[in-house]
Image: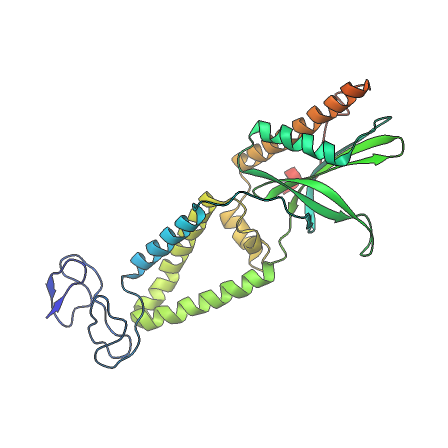
Length: 302
């Protein structure tokens, strides 16, 4: 007779599940001997055994650990050196040369950061990135980046001739880690397939691979999406499988389009606010309504 590690009920020696609570009876994968609840080695053959608990319990324990890591208290952010920008797909663009305006790019960025923070855009953050002015050996130009989920604003302000030009590009950066994500996913899938056959046998292992693994992956993606939008950029950039993943887990919806347009409008309004302050202080003509409109590119074609 075997005692259930979960509910302490007595079960037959040959049982694979507890007849009272349904919990799986822990057995050695090598010799099928019954294991003690907290055993790390088999008492019959001496083989090392995995962690205690059913597969579902292990999954929920892992999710709890991820949630604890994601919600941990973070130290105050220290401004870092500007990062090198990566290629991106441009969604919309706006630019304006303001004649006879003298201004400092750093003061412009500082005022703009204040205007953006005042709008309290959900899940948005600012940083500095460097874009090359030309080829590989050309100088770097610093931009202010506003990021939210999968989209970013790269905003530039700089002197040009006798004036000062302001430009922003709204884009969707392309992750360079797509091939690595495909390799890691392939290794994980192969390990899960082999582990399923070893733990459950051929029939139940095949059933778990066809039904259980997709469900667990869906739950994982759903959980991570609640923590951080845009965490799966590398999965979308995977060769071959990236488009399928995006179609299933990240399709364009009315809500996504609406919130992206609100993000664009909020950042654009902050830029115009700072530009109006600069032109008003210098006694320069304010921008017209036509000059304030951004240029949409590929947003509605996606």
